[in-house]
Every structure is written in C-alpha cells, then in structure tokens.
Length: 574
Picture: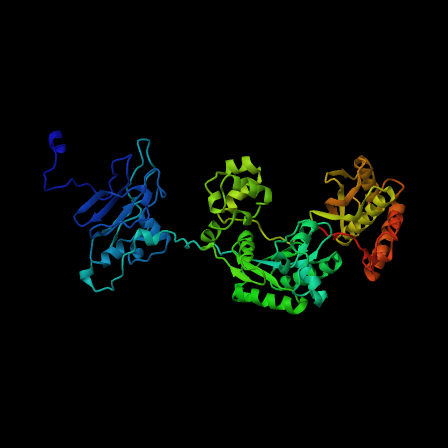
C-alpha cells in the first residue's frame, strides 16, 4: 500500500477506524469517552473536567472508558475499574476474571450487544495526559451473550453519577435557645414582699442615690442612679428604704437555683440570669412552656415576678424581655431577629450606655437599624474595641456563650458613709471591715487574690483608685489588709472628707496550702486554721458576731444586726 493511500483523507460517509484497544493520540485539552460499539470504536469529547460526576450518555454500546484530564479528579482509572471497586456485578466475570469489571454487561443486557472491551489508562506522557491505553494481553475481553439469545430481566444501567461516593446532605445547624431571666424591681420588690404595707406604693431602695425603685415609683420618672434629692422632688410620697444586702442575696440564690433545675448552663449576675436551653427540646418539649413553668415556680417560692425573654442569642433574649416588662414572656426567633432589632431605640442595644447613646444621637442615629451603615473601622474609631461588637450586635448577631462562672473576675466590697468623714480611725475601721467581708467571700470560693485595689470618692465628687499585686496570692485578712491600708494612706492626701470607700480583690488563683516564707510555715498554718474557725462561727451565728482589729472603732457609730454593720449602701459582689 502506497504512502499516499495511507494518508488519504476518508470519504464523508466513512470514519477512520482503528483497533478497539489501539492507543489514542495524546491530547492536552479535554478528556474523551471511547465506546466500543458493533460498528467500531468511537471517540467523543467529554464535558468539562469540572463536572466529572455527570452521567456519560452514549448511543447503545458495550463498554465505556472515561479518564479525567490532568487537572481532573480521577486519573489512571476508568469506569470499568470504578464499577469493579463498587462491586457492580455482571455476567462476564466468569470468563474475564475478577480483575476488571465494567458496565458493559448491563449495557448489553439493555439491548446493545457487542464485545466487552475495557482497558486501563497509561501514565500521562510529557506531551499531555494519555486518555486511553492498550489493554494488557493477559486480560482477554469477555464475550457477552446478545439479548436475542435469551431473555434476561432488564436493569437500569448505572451512571457515573450514581457510582461516585455519596455525601450525606449537610445538616442545618440547630438554632440556639437562650432564656434571659430578669427579676422585676429586684430590691424594691423584696422590700414590698417583706413589708405588705409597702405594696402598691412607690418604694425607693438606696442611700444617696437610687439603687432600685418599684414600678409605682418609675411612673414619676424615677430610675436607678438618680440622686435621692431629685427623686424626692419628683415623687414626694415615695418611701425610702436603706436596704438589706444579705436578704437580697438569699432571694437571688433561690431564684437562680430554680433556673439551674431546667438549664444545664446558667450564668448569673446580681438580679438576672442567662440560661442555655439549646438541645433540651426533647427533654422539656416546648421551650415557651418551660419558661412559663419557671415563672410560676419562682412566684410560688419567693413571691417575686420575673420577666423572661427567649431568643437565639444572649442579646436578643434580653432585648425580647425588655419589651414585655414587668412579669412578661416574649420570644424572638432567628428569622424575626432582623425586623425586631431594626426599629429598637439605640439605647436598648447591648453595649450602648448613656455616653455612647448621647454621641450617636448627636450623629442623628436614633434606632439600631440606623447604626448599620457605619463600618467597623468607624465604630472602632468612635468607641474603641467595643465598636466592632456594636457592628455585629446591631445586626442581631451575638456569639457570646453562656458560661457558669466558677471563678469571678473580682470580689468587691464598698459603701458610702452615713456622713462624710476624714477621721483616720473611722476610715481604717471601715476598710478593715470591708477587707474582712471580701476575704471571707474569697475563702468560701476557695480562691486567693493576686491583686488588691482600694477606691476612694471624695465629698466633692472626685475619685481615686490604686491597685497593688501581692508577692504571694493570699486570702488571709492580715496580708490583704496590710496592702489595702498602704494604698489608703497613699491616696488619701487631700484635705477633703471622704464620701465612699471600697476594696476589690482580683486575679484569683485556686487555693492550696498557703506558701509562706522560710521558717514561717507554722505561723501560716495557724493563721489559716484561725480564720477557718472564724468563718465557721460567722456562718452559724452571722458575720456580726465577731468584730476584730480596727473595725472595733465602728462600734457605737453604726447600727448592727446578725449580718454585721448596717451600711448606708449595700455591699454586694460585682
């Protein structure tokens, strides 16, 4: 045969034929599908390599070979090999062995007889990926019986899409469920509960400023933090009570104990709690009904009403409760969050106090939705690091978790004097009394502070605060008192009487054995045993049963009860 005849182009009604297992010319572009049909082997380009899971549709044929391109997912593999790995049975296995399987048998049973031809791809050459390669001679093609030779049940031919690894559909992230419990008019409501004569009357708890006021007093415009002089002018018939901090703490603990009965995680503050109810639907059922039962139980046990808000995060739960105070219950879902937050006043956004609200209103920003156009950079420039939190919260997003705080950030004891004073003995006596209360609270929690801070407020409104780190963390009264007394003497340098005094312990570590200096271990052990005995006596008979040191100067100056000296303002932990 002449060279001219070998390379002459084919006629229009013919196609070039080559052996079914002859190597295909190398291509560098797209993959191809080779079908061994009764009329010969045909090669056609496959779709783009980005959609390798789409089924290969071809005319009736006996075998299909598909190889991915160089950037595809599968290389050096064919559909026959994939079918074999997936365990697709076909009747030709007896003759061709279990080494190679294909879907050609199913195609033949469907009505397209012919030879079962499948080969393995050769490694790609330097010119480009090889799309098909010759079958090893050891694997002889299996002869399939034609559908005409005998009836066989028809089965749908598997496609490449159904033979690929199936992925489970992505499951939706369950919506969080946070319940916010807020005690209504906390201090004032307890005073009304203790004294029925105060029910229905405007009640103010505080000294100097309002610590809490009843809802009857709020109708006159009274609010927490308002000076008592202004409160008397707005509501002359208001009843003013100095307060009983220890009683308030007992009521709060009773309410928080009820919350822990329904929620696995409860984070508590002075008069509110966050309860994480996420994932408890199968245990409790309807979460709104859980909140209703909790409200009833608290009312029956304490006589106090609480407002509950249920939402997908802490911020929305608290914001929902604010809309139904007092003694209300509201729920905001994630789908309703955007519309709910958008029109709320800017003062109701978590993290926006009086100063921030004044700044935003000066910029003509009155609602939470109007804050959204400001970028995180602008808010950070205005308010510092909390500005980025405001950028998220104004969109209804809050990722803060509910954590049971085993270790508080700080323990604070402070009070204002019944009259402004500059007497050293009275100031030092009050400081020792406050230090003793704070150290007892730390010992009961099994904590030792690293840092001691003393805060002063003068009669003219100016304040001062300094802190000092202890050489060794200690919860012993003499150690903490020595540092606090030195801080007081360093700060109290003006010839102005003091109006308020406070001490704060922070940077806590877990209490072990107190590590004293060399040759002082015996003294440290005796001191620890002494204060353990003090705490036991005070726990049984009240804190006021033991008064020691400079605190004795307060005897006769302040009223006393079994809980200790009656201070002008409540001394509570922050």
